[in-house]
Image (cartoon, rainbow, N blue to C red; front, side, top):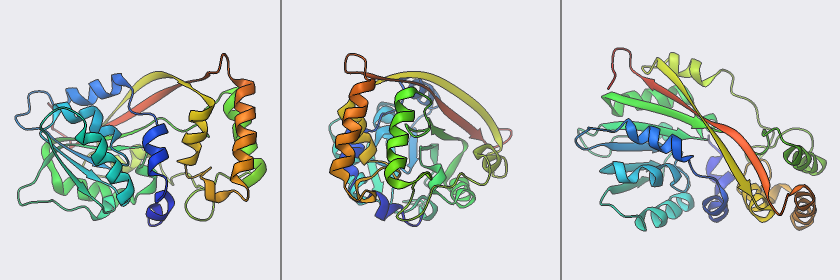
Length: 269
């Protein structure tokens, strides 16, 4: 995750505007984990522009957002300040691996990481989580892939256009290509203190406008503007391609948002 700060430094506006939030059903599920706790707290790792915290803010008294990108956290603070409720929101501009308890006796009830776990040193992050999690706490590792991996005719055509400019490999980081994690997230969790794992799947349907897809691409590691020799030309070509595939101006995405929920053995609520 060492190059994440440089990677997302100038993308916070597009990220905040165009990245999809949590499906409603997934948010309801996560909120249910906090039921009947006297003063529930959330620790969100790789918090980005605050989408997870926004969904869960009505259910917590404190939310700690961890992300190395100060631009992302600035966006998160603006978003959360506009939401009702009296929860305390604290931001921590550090890598998840480097997070430490913000005050003596700190314990969190729910640790979330959405669409960001692959950027992290996962064993180190889970060891940190063990130090700051309450005995009953749950860790939720979440995600739904990306438009690069989504199997639809329009996404395949868009991926082909990107590859025609940038090469076959999926780009990632400030240099080089994306590499799949060496092992499954389930294996990372099984090797940690949070080895009691359940999987929860939430189907979703999203509608995209072509302009929204272009904004989304600008926020990604595989199609951000600085990768292209002529980004304006790429966006013109992508706009035309997306309009050809759109039905009444709409592009459809159907997928599954997956939550890997992990607890320490012998604990439940």
